[in-house]
Length: 174
Image 1: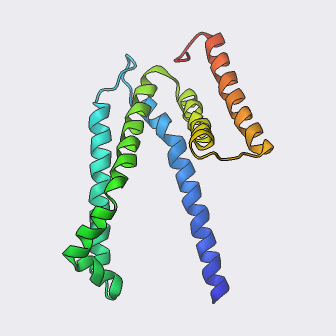
Image 2: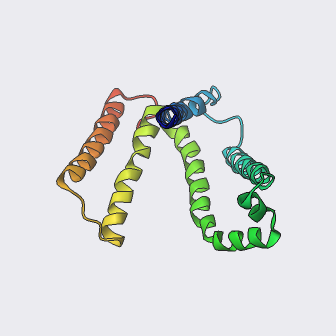
Image 3: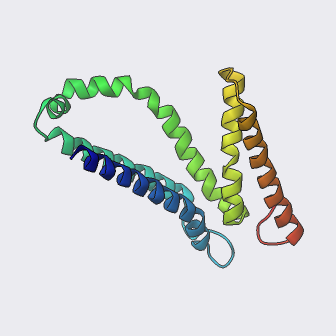
């Protein structure tokens, strides 16, 4: 019985990762397909970004109500207004990365105006390099040789992608 539960959890994890990869891969393609004949969006990217964040909040509130109505100590703690306010105060700093995430999502839309979907995906991988540099400078993180080589390969891949789009002379390269 325990082995069966472990197998179900593994299958769930694989499905979650596969779904995440599929959705992340489809995002730039679907956004690109939503452009009009002039290469512009027929809608406001700010509105789309705002509605996405509102939808996430509504989903989180629905989950909160769902779990608050469950029997047991967890549900009881969610039914206490004082405990909810205390938890909100403890997590208020999460608004900073949340705001940065919303800005990042807006920038992805703006990038779609000027670059092809493959180029947007490649450029978004530069966040790995940025995070690595911030970890090195701010947190004094030590990276292995293999990790530095992986970062170098990432930069080379992005460079080759950009050079090929510049040389082809078309379609939203640099």
